[in-house]
Length: 608
Image (cartoon, rainbow, N blue to C red; front, side):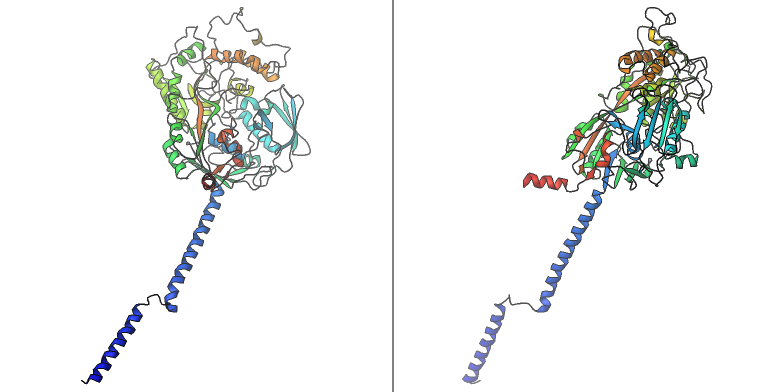
């Protein structure tokens, strides 16, 4: 090769190397169109995903706003609030939220519901014999049927005769309901001046449905409620699985319709499970009977308010005064004196500091009681409604204590309707454990202790006289210690209740003891007629009841309420929320709302 050709080859190779070097030194040259497309697609996909996520979050928040979730203790499936012993807080809450009442509980006593009635005019404010009601024209059931006098007549007729009803004694004082041309204007006439008239027509029922179905009154509301006249309506209930769903009643005409679409009640087995459900936001509120570690457990939760709630109801053991071996007060006193009530309450509540009953009556210890006679073959039978496990535990424990004391006893559990429908029959058990209102007003005393002559639709002749022997064996002689006000006054307005006669039997109702005592009857009649005042007679009345030794209070009702901050109520502080004797903390549930962003807002305010 010549020198010139060699030089040309060298120059060419150097040029090629420079070209290659220049290419490798520019890695950031603009990509082609094909190179840009994947990057834009990824960006667009990310925006789409973000939008979808935001929509899903917004939808979830909107769904959360529509539902309030509450954890509760197990509850019964019979939603009829008029039955004996049916004071379950969930049932009471459902009743208050779905069924209308003429008078409802307020901060200072009973208050007329102006959504249901335009006016209520008694001929005497304290003890009327006639009360005229005028209903609002807009009042209607959730199926569109107007609420009329028929609903009042139906409730009065059923409760006056239903042996399983708790307030038969009150409704038996209704003599007639006089109607006019209008079905929303009528007058209720009583058989005597009647001070407990405001207790009537609480939780009205849709007569146009139940009367037509002709089902047994005590059975017709098992896991069902035919129609609503309140802010909410029952959509679904499964007591076995522990689930209730209420939905907004779109036909509710009142000034305060439900603020939230649905309320879900879910039974929670224990406080630890309830605490975890609050942590994980499965529930917004927890309402459970207080146990020994309840408050300690709830104190560990962040952003959860809590309070204790005491309802004026209590678990009682009631002896049947008509049963053989229990017809004298001294025999009954021997039974009750062998029961360690405080221990039973602690066992049932699983709390050494269990709530004591608000109303306490104890037989006098100054009299030597006569022994009650029961045998291993015929033991004293203590019954409890099978739907109420607290009552079942109490009955079993009481039977154990009596057996230890040498009194053969056994506990049984029965269907509540069957049990409470025969408390005045020969097949009634010797004793019953049930929840009752702690007597606070005259209506409670009348319902639980008054006896009227006659028979209810399912009543039978008692085994023995319903008249009772005092603990004081010399009480027949009217000496200086006799109560002068106990005799019948022929000039008194309270003479509509005749003296108790041999063979009298209570007409079912809340008088579970089947006690017919002349002194108690006479005093209650005078109080009902307004001849005496309960405030001045309460101690005397309680003493008379204690002397009869028919009831042993076991346990009060104390619940713990925990509220997550997303649940908004009447005020920011749970402790300030109004409560009632019936619905408890659920008294204002129709006002409650959910704010899913409450926790976020607080954190932002705290750190902003």
